[in-house]
Image (cartoon, rainbow, N blue to C red; front, side, top):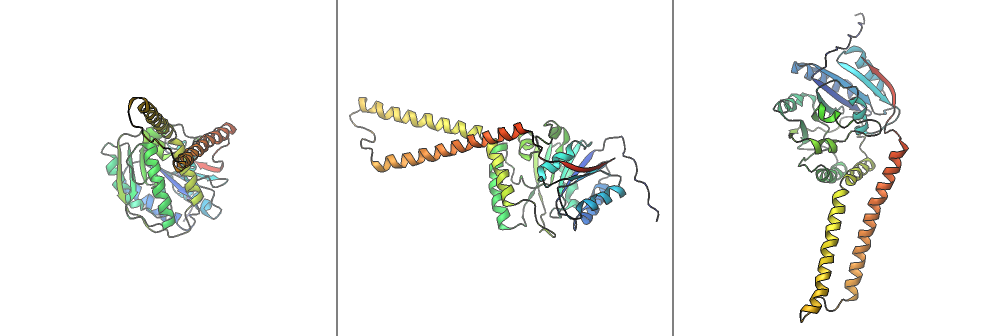
Length: 318
């Protein structure tokens, strides 16, 4: 069979743009792409697929280029110089996307592309964000525990009730994402987007054990991501701390006032143990506040350096 030239990219904007992030997916990407393509075709609605190789050094990039050459619906493939993380990988594709609706997915086969129509059906009901949540998660204990902590922090940061922020399986109204002007110096954040989305819905999705390779989410990356979201919470902890200080000051004032107005005293005898405990609590609070201030200072410094979160090594587009 003779090779055929790929069709030109349609000038009409598709309804859906599917974002696919890949990290050492040489063994899984062909199966994933075949299932994803068949599922999107079954919807009978115009779509495009964008794929990024997040610094993998195996054959992932070669596979992505081959897929790009044979399928005109794959509108762009991008290769990073070095692994930059899932959020950065998604960011690199946002500027290339033309769809009115963004679908986010991993390519590691832990989530089934065949369940996309289920999420689309919910989105069609008028939601601006539909997210999958892994009801029966098939990851190790050392992945699940940090993830639960991260979800708790992200619920506070976004002031939402989402159960599973880490599930990449999401459908967004494209206008919501584009409003943030994400780029190399301001990477995509699920927390930021969810915090601004009023019409949200979570849907249970099937989660499968990872068949090939290992996750790019190391404990260090999970810790760093948690710290990112703790910083987003910083305004509220400072407000709570200020309120607590005012309340304690009021109690202390009442104690002093009671000594003049009442025949008995509150905490007439202040023991050494009580003073020591109060001192330890005060020192720990001071260290926590200084740590937050230090985190702010470092982040401000890094932001001023204008160091990009990712650098594109190669890009193919239609």
